[in-house]
Image 1 (cartoon, one colour):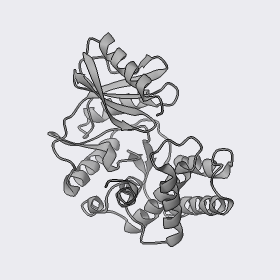
Image 2 (cartoon, helix red, strand yellow):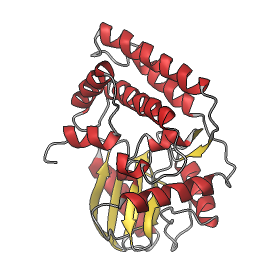
Image 3 (cartoon, one colour):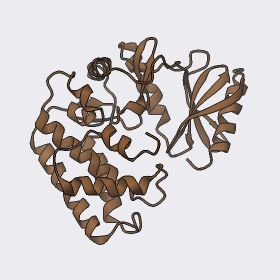
Length: 287
């Protein structure tokens, strides 16, 4: 999000109106939404422009998952669990969970993700199919006005690869269920209560291997019953979708064009398909 200052002002104003003292705000993450730690009230706030968020769905889903014992970050208990709007921003308030370790161990990560999937099978909420996300990526690639810097040869290659992967994965006939959608390390917190998942706006229905395509290789090694052929195709699909989104006009992902170029290179280079964290660490400065 480009207007971080206004997002912070909206979040602190909402907190103050609810008698939660928020004299300082620390930016924890900034992409299509801003994640903030508000102090001294110690609240985790998520802020997005009104109309660009699925916050109501996210709150409802988090509540229902918590009820069935899923490892999710809890909502802030001192206020009503709803979306608060201020100055064109939608603000949701969650419990801030102090990290207890820089990273979650692969075994704990896999166990938490499996528990999340079990809980999601108990929750019946309307949600899109994972193929809808492929369609979104295909639409970006197909429209030069939405991806003007994507070269014609790359546009044709990426469009063909997305269509081919859609057909191949769907053709496997694997079972589908409710998924997180993007359970990568940035969306899992290491807390005193174990790993907790956040950010359910990309929730969709699909094979569990689609979720596993977003997590480190070592995590997949601890997750039971993985179809490794399907996982390889889903990893390739994730790389292809990321390539499409990084070329979209107005994309605000840090170093997005470098990611877009690297994803295209990986797709052309062929297997073995790297886990998403390997790609991210390779391209993130200072890591």
